[in-house]
Length: 466
Image (cartoon, rainbow, N blue to C red):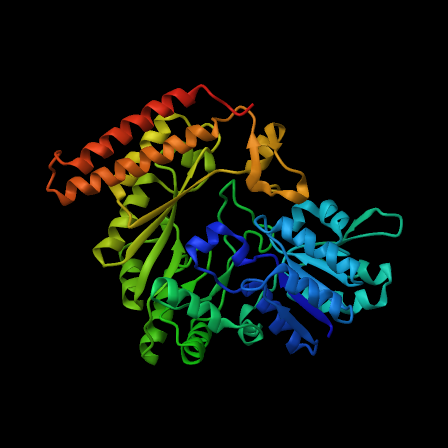
């Protein structure tokens, strides 16, 4: 075996994920696998999703040492660090890549990685595997897009690798390397619909200050519609899912491509419910019609805030009105809407919280998810607040999600904001069901919750992270 690929997501070790139960396979690793296999490398995958750390560690200790490649993101850092440590103890050479390691080259190298891959990994690994076998530093220096330690311990970073220009030349992800059926069955058991993921493009060209572009840069490279349709047709035939998750950053970015894709599916008689993510400014009547034609079940929109002032500070490039219009367009065509919201971006105040509450009530998406902004290293947002960033954990024990920003509102403040938002939306929906009646036990309870949330907000307003 030339390479064993794995990741640090263990479903059964995450209480929150066990409640959600919507796992998807690691497409990035599966793309690496198919590319390297097509170049003649012997590559295997240990999919950790339904497995355990001990099973992986047993494999590392019980197999002849080779090269281990680990995908890392900010959610899985502590587990990835442990995997690297165990692999080194068992005699493996180690490579780490993904969206996080580029921001923490020194830390990952110190944690046990022999090499950090920066950016897309397919061509880099193709060149890196033979170089690692020789053990010569000069061979590593010839590989673009990596970092490693020299003989005296200094960190070497080679020139960046250009993005692959032609995604159509890449083989499909090697789904056969893992048990996709277990993912489909898990979805079907918990949600009544089995789901499989695919991507039609790589990258996002937009400038949101809190978003990382560590792997794909600010690019948008898209596959030909007919070739995406080929992959979809193969997925439907082999795995028989009930729905599809299109995991692009912005699925509706190109109206012309979307129309061609819809025509291609119609020509083949393919239609299956799917979910996707978009931006409000990339959704109009024509695009909404096309999504409905394709059978879109749900569109997720990054709203983030109902305050235009906050959106402008984020450099989102959208307006509150565009988000509301996008939701309306989808609703009118029977497409469900999901909304992502973010509390706590730099400068957010009480009036911005209230604006977000009114925005969600006006939009009334089918579902909305909230988070509190956290600065990811390597982003403009992180640079803006870097002098005030505090971490409650050591680097190897936490992630950028654990960062706290000195002087920002307290966590209690954002808990109250969440309670206010959810109670206000629930009250609005209850009153609509009751024809506008302000009577009833539920309405009274919700009004009490709203009053408590507003009082809590006011009380917590003066509290700040120490």
